[in-house]
Amino acid sequence: MTVTGECFCGGVRYELEGDLRDARSCHCSRCRKAFSGQASAYAEVDPEEFSWLAGEDLLTSYEGQHGFGLLFCSRCGSTLAGAFKGVIHGLTLGCVNGDPEVEIGMHIFVSSKASWEVLPSGGLQFAEGPE
Image 1 (cartoon, helix red, strand yellow):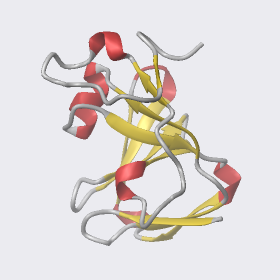
Image 2 (cartoon, helix red, strand yellow):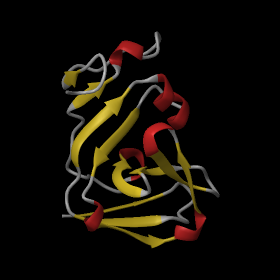
Image 3 (cartoon, one colour):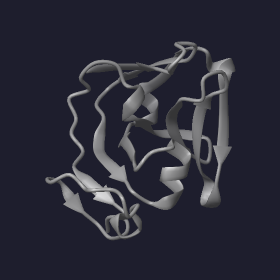
Image 4 (spheres, one colour):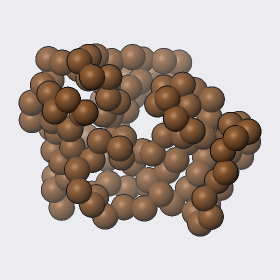
C-alpha cells in the first residue's frame, strides 16, 4: 500500500510504501501540548518504507526526553512524524491523505486525559502505555 501525506501549507510531503500499524491515540498531557488537542492520533511505520517527497528543508524537529521527538513544518506548524533518536518511527494521522485503512486500536495514558475529554467507545484503553 502507498500512503501519502502533507502538512497544512503543502510545503512538506511524504510517502510510505507500506502499511501503517498499531494506530493509537495518546491522551497524556505532553501530547495534548504537542498537538494542541485532546490527544494525538499516531501510527507506527517501518522507517525503511518512508521517504520525504518535498520540503525536507522546511522540517524542524524537537527531541524530548529519552530521545523521542517530533518533526513538524517550520512554515505552518503541522506535526508530521515522530522519531526516536532521529529515525522516523511513526506518522501523525491528521496529516495522512485519503483513507489510510487503519483504525485507532488503543487509547493510551487515559489516566492523565483532560477532564473535559470524553473517550470514544471501542478500542483498548490503557491507564499508561501498553505492556
